[in-house]
Image 1 (cartoon, rainbow, N blue to C red):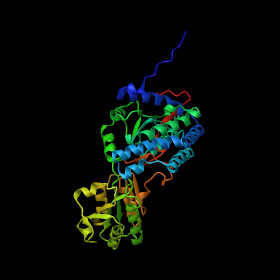
Image 2: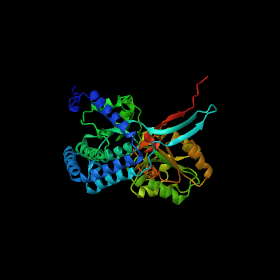
Image 3: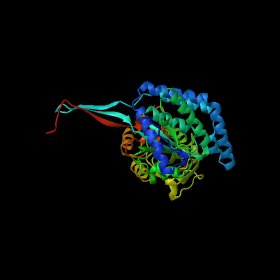
Image 4: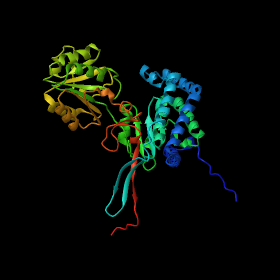
Amino acid sequence: MTVQTPVRPDPDSLAPEALVEHLARDGRAAQRVLARLADEEKAAALKAAAEALRAAEAEILAANAQDMAAGEEKGLSAALLDRLRLDAGRLASIAAAVDQVATLPDPVGEVISRAERPNGLRLSRVRIPIGLIGIIYESRPNVTADAAALCLRSGNAVLLRGGSEALHSNRAIRAAFARGLESVGVPAAAIQLVPTQDRAVVGAMLSAAGLIDMIVPRGGKSLVARVQADARVPVLAHLDGICHTYVHAAADGDMARRLTLNAKMRRTGICGAMETLLLDTQFPESASVVAGLLDAGCELRGDARARALDPRILAASAEDWDTEYLDSVLSVAVVDGLDAALEHIAAHSSHHTDAIVTEDAAAAERFLAEVDSAIVMVNASSQFADGGEFGLGAEIGIATGRLHARGPVALEGLTTYKWLVRGSGQARP
């Protein structure tokens, strides 16, 4: 009897829902293979992928040149083109990042807790992969390799849907990465890239409950808002980074000037940049703090008491307190003490990162306890809101929700757990 190999459908011929189902089923099958791999096998697969990326330098840079030419023709901004651009140095950094993920501790199999019940049942909670993770992202082609590496290291398969601007770059990076995996016997379907830019595929991914276990959006506000509004699959994301720094009455003046300048102006376009500065009425050096920001080229928009500190401060509108500028623009308010600062943050924070500058230990502890954000800081710049700075090695994003993971999401955040119960014949009475 002759066994015929089943004919696999052509992905290009499938409707969006059928395409996502086809890719997801392949990904889930590959994930079951990943779940069986030992720590050293996953590390070896990532090192092989990094080497494959280096070997494919000419291919990847040629693909990126196509994307750059198309982007220039479309009139993409200089900032977007810079995000899109790859060169030998940037590609080497991408491969090095994959190598670095391979060295991180494997979270899978970690025993979170153990207990023994009076009836002799022995219980343990053990970390396991989430399963198949869908990642929807925009113009940065490095996300293709970064997300693939983090997911594979944590035992997850991944379904990637990149932006049209980086179409050729993403395909070339994924192809090289997959070749590396296959060279050590890991199925290429562990790392898949949606083969079409049909926007309907995004909707199909968001509604693929039971096939995709979690969605991670990486991109602008409109993308994240759509994902959070439409998803029927759990989402790990943050929408805005409206981060506050509160300079308490007991703050050190030099520290306040240094930290507020760094929190805003080091890099204005990242999600951990300070967007609102709160100055205590009893802090005696507020004028010099705002002068330092203004002299550095930051536009300040303030309430009436803030504007009295420096004539260069513009009037803030009601919308300013809820705006993520991602630019050299900052809203400033003067507040009557810690209670007022906490009230302002509760009303306007996006629960990303909020900080206090103070030498008063009691005020610092109260701030840490009462501010309900994913990251709460004392006497540190909010620009430290980053997985690498937290010693996590790498991150797939920042999460501001209250379930599963919060703050920088690294390998541990890409796992869940299961209960293992070991008995010796116990039956429940």
